[in-house]
Image 1: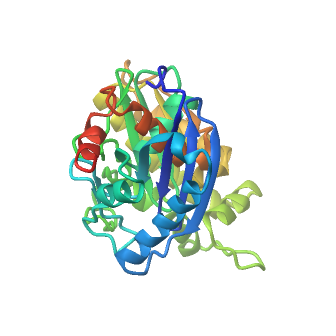
Image 2: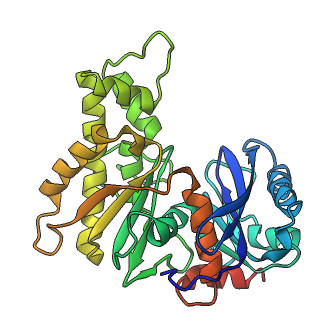
Length: 328
């Protein structure tokens, strides 16, 4: 994927529950101009869209704007790339919101390609990151939620609506707690940052004098030898390992790339993850599965959105292209 990218510029948008980031990105993955606004996630849909338009306005003020000939969007989901709409769980004002059409208008009619944020991260890692050179890969974002995307036979596989590879809502605990998605015992319920920290608190871990009860604080405590904090990461790693092994068994991936804030814990997460994976990925064709950290960092969403825009029309992003068609 993405070996024949254009040398021009595209507009990239990374839209989540806390921030709306935008950039002009060139064909080598360099961010040339960037902008960012907080997401007014508790406001109405038009207020959220106004923040997106502000970001686009910042980019349009650059002399490079006219050289950009397409827009890529990586959005929190669920997304429906076939219809060009988004319904982010953490942005209540957007339900079946026609984001592709609205961005197309705000971007002076440029064609728009929409993918989910997990798929965007996957595109970034396959283009420029740890999954580069791998034809079959799963990439995960483990943060406030758990998302993901798939590369199969060398091409991004977003699925008909752009949500394929959403590992966070694979059930790994049949009698587990109800999940916000309506299911039960999902990977996200066990491995996301907020749930990981909640479990540590429930089991007796206490934050330090600063009161920080985040997953990062739990990671620091685990690193310092706190057994309760370490056990919370062990449980999160076990859930991720089960989901990764199930995915590998189904579609024969050979690498899993893990990014997001929780992955910033480093070996506090990756050591038990690799150990647990050995107990789940036992068949001969998944036994050599590699798990590595993502390397595209905080720009993964922007770079993945740019990759989606560059790949428009090349056949690599079938579901996303269908979504873009509705707003081009």
